[in-house]
Length: 210
Image 1: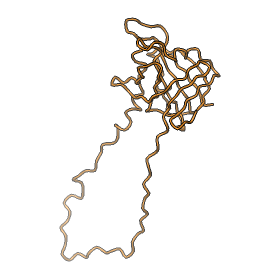
Image 2 (image 1 turned 120 degrees about the horizontal axis):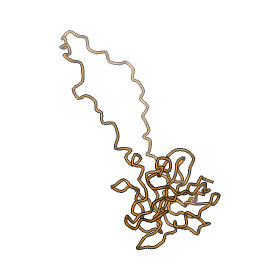
Image 3 (image 1 turned 180 degrees about the vertical axis):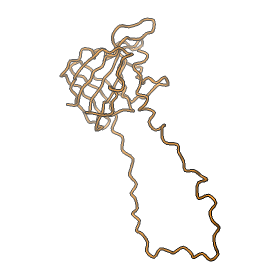
Image 4 (image 1 turned 90 degrees about the vertical axis):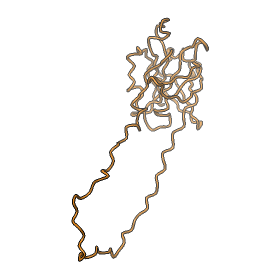
């Protein structure tokens, strides 16, 4: 498949929408009165106000990225690489279908909420059939696990496996950063168009943390 799904561009663009307003450089009181030679000097404070020094808050440490995806009932055990967004707005997918990609602008398994999204090509003319060609055979109740860079294994229980036409993929829902911790695994499926070299559907597995 040449492009798996449109990425959640709004998430990737956070940070470019920061406010641009700056204070008026020429602000102040217009036509201020001239200073008088007999004006009394401003009083000097007799007591200082204690100032509490603010301790800088360190930036949050990113959660460890996923490194492996395992679906034991399907015999799937594949490495996972972090991926981003292509210039056309589509999610990047590793070229080799034996390697999955984790959407690095979304939640990781160790994050407090939201969906960890992992995707891979179903096949390739160069590499052949990939492990996620078996994703369609997953059944509700089966286990899926993701190992992260810290060695932590997060286990999920499959809730659904659905064929969704590519143009109708509910991106906002699947890439949600809110709600219970979950896992979304996506590959291609359905009919194959020889002319466009693409599949008609996405196969989408949704699993909740065990």
